[in-house]
Length: 198
Image 1 (cartoon, rainbow, N blue to C red):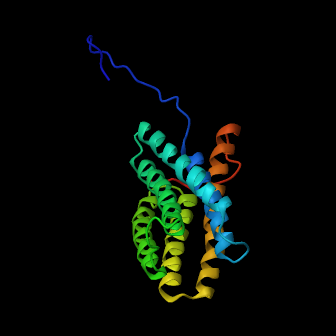
Image 2: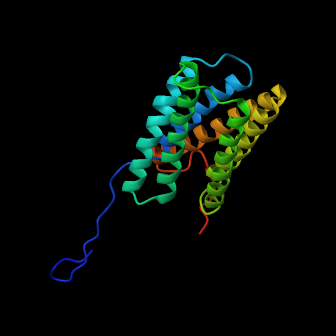
Image 3: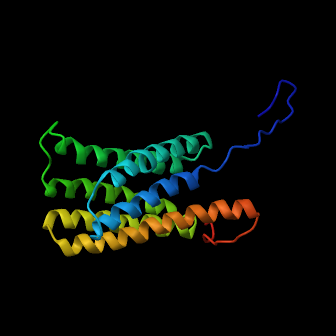
């Protein structure tokens, strides 16, 4: 930026990195939901509450913070997946509360397919980013496709496979978040996330 005298003024960004918040909101909520999908406990307030507040609201906040940092990828990813969690909870509760007739499971297959296609496109973007994000987005693409197949076929086995795969997906996001936090705090690489492509 130049002032009236023609000299250049540089503005330093001193705001915090919002990515760990978004990745943790996504990762921890994904782990909880997929522990349910793997058959360990019923879907209840714990998962739904996390979906609204940490998976949903926290990711939207992180996305808005990424917008302030001029990060289109981060804004699109965190706002989209935050709103995914809010929409998923809404879909689960609208039918349960009788506000509207619940969609059949096979309809939900199309919902998950569209999210899988979107995530696959975002995965292509990670090829210019670090290895940790590549793992998160690739495994999330697979997870959405498995959930679509589960809902189209009604296969309990596919649902359990999706659950275990989803636990891994969530854990990979948690790793990517904690790595960024600890690497920044210590000023060196404690947990590698892979090279950034140029």
